[in-house]
Image (cartoon, rainbow, N blue to C red; front, top):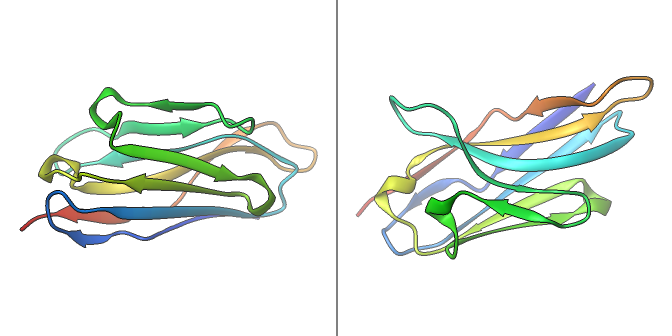
Length: 120
């Protein structure tokens, strides 16, 4: 089986920083794109940032210049460094991994989510 597990959420004051981590484990042949999504109360889940296995990153306009996504392919892990956090960044952050298991086709796997709250 495959597991995708996030960590690093918490409560932070406006202007502060947090670093999220996400690791994919299990029977994995290859991981393609990995990314971070978020869902605030009463809103739809939205893309935050994605990164390919080659390191090409893509960001939502709302986080450009404040968030940085990075990846360690050897550890099947991605990170999200979040700086200059705002109240509107408050959400549950989910990790997504597009990966292929042995004898399978690429599928999307989601983590359980980690809460990020930005408040004074």
